[in-house]
Amino acid sequence: MEDWLNVWEKSATYDIAQSTISSMTMNEILNLDGRNGAEFYSLLNDQKMNYGWIEGSHEFKQEVAKLYHNVDDENILQTNGATGANFLALYALIEPGDHVIAEYPSYQQLYDIPKSLGAKVDLWKIHEADNWYPSIDELKQLIQPNTKLICLNNANNPTGTILNREFLLEVVALAKSIGAYILVDEVYLPLDDPNQFVSIVDIYDRGIATNSLSKTYSVPGIRVGWVVANHELIDLFRKYRDYTMICSGVFNDLMAVYILRHRKQIIARNQKIVLNNLKIYKNWIENEPRVSVILPKAVSTSFPKLDIPDDIEEFCIKLLKTKGVLLVPGTRFDTPGHVRLGYCTDEATLSNGLTKISEFMIEQYGVKN
Ligand SMILES: Cc1ncc(COP(=O)(O)O)c(C=O)c1O
Image (cartoon, rainbow, N blue to C red; front, side, top):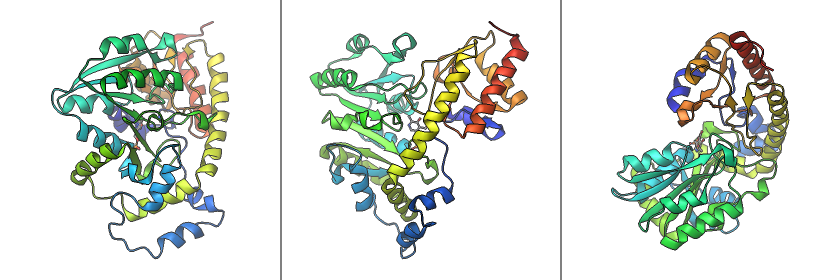
């Protein structure tokens, strides 16, 4: 998927492939305090540009801890994005010969990094017919006495599906029966009801949660993420972290603190974008006979199915070249026939992009009733 975006994203006029909720400009960020950055600059101006806090500042850890019900500041390590957090946890935990189960498709790191570290990775498939949930019965078949880790992506990229509390508790019960860890990449929050979201670290002592400011908080540009886990695991991660990064940087840490302190305003901004765009998207789907989707619960990514005769990669390339619309073909998630559609860009880009897709399909395949 990253290869696809690297090659094509800069040529898009209507980029509706991304999973971030419309990124904020520096002006928007600085005005979160309503004082044109006075608060942020008062934090920044006296700072020495040294390495700063190695693991993330106290303020950062305090703000992150507030996102969970049962997490102490010491259970948090700052990382370079959620990708850095996933990498750190996997790099520290996985040894050759380990058995890992990974939800599939999901974020590629979660199955490919364990494989690259020598683990045997079994893929736990999600099923469209079950609202893109994987099956507990299939997990029971995959799980082995020596399974070390189960990797989940909640909400899932590309489908946007949220695994609910009951389902997570079933996975926890199975993991607990053999002492396995559960790593959950939690970068997507359901914005219709954020308080309903259940983090793995609040329900399982061997749970590992990774997250960042890239998706729900709309600032991928600062590259700040974190990993949360119990003391024993965090001590292990701390050791490995010394080999992969020193710190996220003084500027990034300060900005992360400032953003987390204005979390409520950002969530309110993003709720507006997501819920408004979801309406536009739903309306388009209802009137577009060649497209169907299991609508995400206000999560910023979706995985619609296209009823077209062509190879999905060829379709996506032709769509981009003739109409300027960027999607990610489902082949990049091993699921041809689908595309990843990120509907949480600005409203004009979404509306124009969807109209262009419809135009393109009529030009290519005629009108379908
Ligand atoms: C599930 C998931 N995890 C992590 C990332 C990357 O996060 P970050 O920008 O924080 O490294 C993405 C980006 O698409 C993602 O979809």
